[in-house]
Image (cartoon, rainbow, N blue to C red; front, side):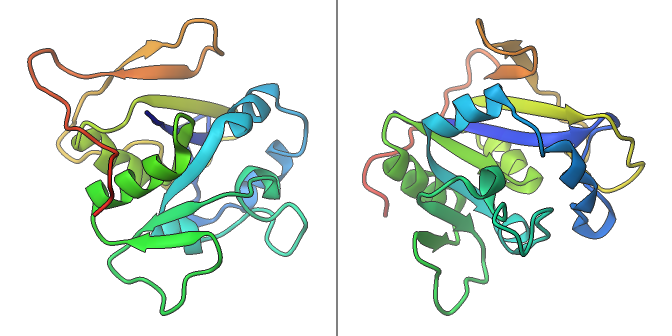
Length: 189
C-alpha cells in the first residue's frame, strides 16, 4: 500500500510560500545536493497536489529545473480541484473529491510514496486521517508572511513521531487511539 507523505521546504518561521504564493525565495536554497530529497524521489510513485500548487509559482519556472524535485520527477500526478482544466497535461489526472484523488494517486504509486504537495491538500488529508508521514526541509530565511506549513483554524493539534533511521524532520502522523482510519486505495471510482 502506498505511503501518503507531505513534503515541503519551509522558512524558519514556518512558511512554504511567501505572500501571494511567491516561491522565488526558495531558488537559492534548493540549488545544492540533498541526499534526503534524492532518497525520497527514488520512492515517489505519484504526486498529489492541489490546484494552487499545480498551477502556482515555481522557483525554477522557465528553466530545466522547473517542476517537482527540480524538474527531476517524471511520473503520474493527481490534482485535487473543483475546476479542472479542459485538457489535462500528459500524466496528470484531475479529481474533484479528496478520497477519489487519494485512491487514484495511491493506485498509481503502488507500494511507493504518494508525495503530497500543497498545504491545503495536506491539511485535508490530515483531517480525513489519510496522511501517513511528514517530511520538512528548512531554508535559512524568515519570510514573515505567506502560506504556512500547516494551518488549521481553531487549532487542530497533530502529533508526529520521528521516523527511525531518517533525518530529524521526517515524521509519522500519530492519530488518536480509538478512531479508525478510513481505507484507501483499491479501485478508484
